[in-house]
Length: 292
Image (tube, rainbow, N blue to C red; front, side, top):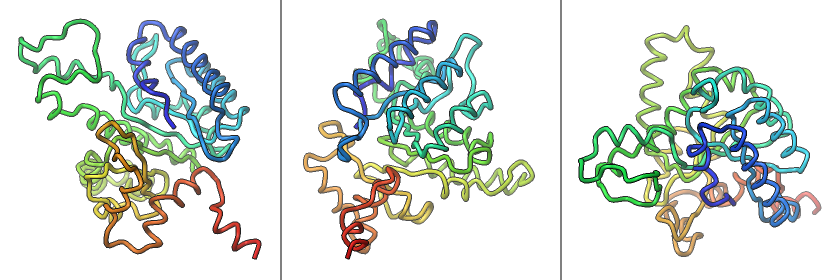
């Protein structure tokens, strides 16, 4: 369970990282008090980490680990800060990744205020000129939807993690892209293969192999999951829902109908077991078998 709109806060506090860190810790503390981070084994509220100040981010990560959370939420974009923007693959964030990986805490990336909205503003009609602060749910121009800067930014985020060696330095790190869809993955997949074929010496291993090992994906219900499975394998595809937003269905479990043609075992993996394994939970049926 993700905190509503928490993923967009960072984009509105570039000039004051201290405020952003304080606000996010306050939110995390509230979620812990009201929901808990999964103590009941059913509802896993997701605490947030901003990387704007790496030292403060590490302290937040330590606090989150101490409270037993199995997941954290980060914004899938560049990292703003007092010294300017930098990529999430920067080595200054290694202590955070090391801590999370050592405690089997999954990093989840959720659609957010991507920080590059000005790219659309350069192309918009004068009639649509921005009137004050960016509002993520105020969609008036079809060009904005077609450009879909969230998709581009998410792709750049994963590319940065892979190309800058985050998973090489942290071989146990796991990340998951939620409510981002997967349409952005396919051109990135092809581009990575092209660059690897041109200059394999720039990589320690094929980027496709890195993604297949470390990354999980939540496709939208209207996207063909079989195409994704062909690339990353069925064990790295997960189900999710955000109804009444368009990323979800009125009856969330109806998403299984999108998996027509898959085996019952593979359907079960996508709808349930893959996520339970990520959360280090033993499915009830497997527990019963173990005790039989």
